[in-house]
Length: 266
Image 1: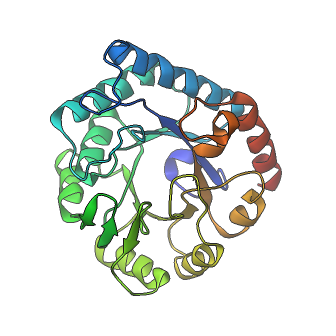
Image 2 (image 1 turned 30 degrees about the vertical axis):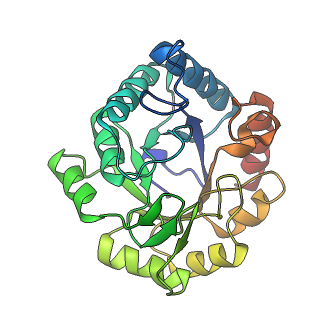
């Protein structure tokens, strides 16, 4: 079993529902406002669900340049959007506010998310500056909000960043499980839409055997067989978009083709 909320399903596919730029973000469409954000993400959700994905994760990928600490307006906006979109959800869902683990847990807890993804451990040199997440605070928040059931998925090699920790990736993963009680480990490529190094994914999967290990970026039709032969599943956003462009809307035909292959593998 990968996660209890997925039952006995094997090789999970977590599909991204990318929210448009939210209030306070440089690219926010103030004319379209919150209604457009909700309509657009709901349109993507309908295509993802029709294509047969296992679960959906809300993310604010369009809030570039990214913040390491969420603003009050963006937390309020994302909470409102997720709450509105829940009305059409037929599958479990998760949330990820980039790149604030405490905000992600807060939004996830109050909206009823089954899981949260974030960078919880490590130290990185990143596009956003030196990145040193605080793992203890979101864990305590999860407990204080009475959501111990909500899984916390640890992305251990952040996109747009280089780890200053020189330990091998598999040791960093093992340490995160031991010291910080990760519910799953995610292995990423260097940038959104680019695949994780195959040897990194394999080393982590061979080391971490008690909890799920998932590929976090860059999974597509060309590499899904290799990824699923190693990992417990994947998180996928870019490949499901029109022309495989991260910033486009979801292409329902691409979702269906991908899930047909996945279903044949599991």
